[in-house]
Length: 252
Image (tube, rainbow, N blue to C red; front, side, top):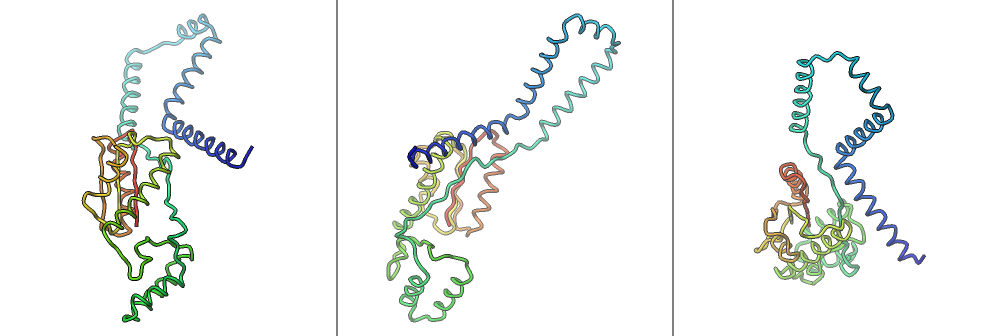
């Protein structure tokens, strides 16, 4: 089998394994009860009706005790299902990988910084210290607008960057999970700095023709911490709106 077809076959198998595991985890109680009922039914058939009648006749039942026991079991089951917190699962995730043309090496970044900030050597030194301690690699990418000398951070360029990152990640996620845009019940978009009007969440809704009753949230201007805040928000919303799918997309 050619390598491309082999990789495609493996990815399809892995996707169905993930879907099967998700279904099993979500319906574990129901499947367990079904197996228990089937096992009891098989045992009853194997024993025979006469043995069951003899067993029932040999047991002295107290009607009041049976009623109280049944009520107690029902109350315990009701309390269990009322107090039980639903489990939230991460179905899948996708990351945007920028093209090679957006990569910037340390040398190129510092060269541009010295040219742009030639009248402010302290800022250049500060950027050098941050670059050394940040853990960024030689294949770190920057938006196309930052590659110019001087940079051209326009509203149009920022919106184009947001569309490239968000749409690419969402397309990959929909392909990996086999979910359709109409299956999304909750949409959360977060961006540390860029806060346009119409919002980024409205941009996604219009792009993918999401449902009119979707619950959308747009977090902007909150820094990199908005990534964790958006995850916590998605969890809280899924606890309230059960059996829902949430899409959380963030860019820093």
